Length: 222
Ligand code: DX5
Ligand code: ZN
Image (cartoon, rainbow, N blue to C red; front, side, top):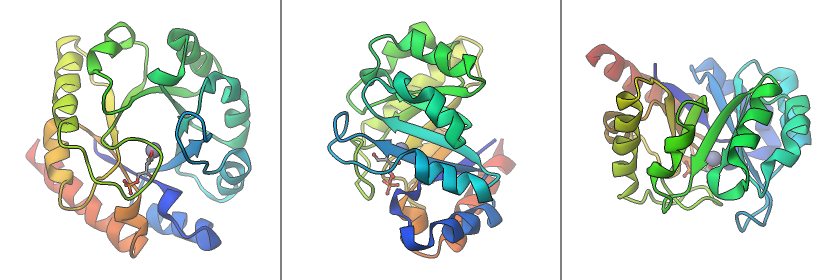
């Protein structure tokens, strides 16, 4: 199952609710919410109040990407704001196992993210613990960057590791995804696709529909 998770970081915040609705109407089942603390990554984005406002009008699955040091501090608050899944960076958690279980005990899905330069082998101990893995295809912190080519090999490697363990866990990819390179990314083994500028950089509904057509093409093949 291929899923689009549009990242609102590139949306027009004066018409945020409307733009999110356009992606839902066109078939995006997830919405990707990039929370940045200005410490783990250089920039600061938004937090609980924005997520809670969107929650009032959206029935999409809220995929919250925490680019925050020690994100375990915010699990309860994110749940209250309306998160369905909390994704934490391996690099930001001193006690990753504890943080994953803290998220699951709250009744939310837990995902683990890796920066481009962190090898996928570091996930071997938690392969069965997480509900999803997120591979960054750019250095986190900003939308609209260009995909780092060696990250495609990491998708393939992680899919092989999961297959070898008999797991069909979702692999989400984030950063630099476009309508022109998404086929290559799907072929490498990713199935949850984050796209910020490729969706909100133009007509959000039309761009979402274009991604959905490519997904259909791939679903027909497998
Ligand atoms: C980057 C964020 C991404 C970002 C992706 O640090 O995690 O989710 O919004 O933006 P694009 O798709 O424009 O690279
Ligand atoms: Zn993200």
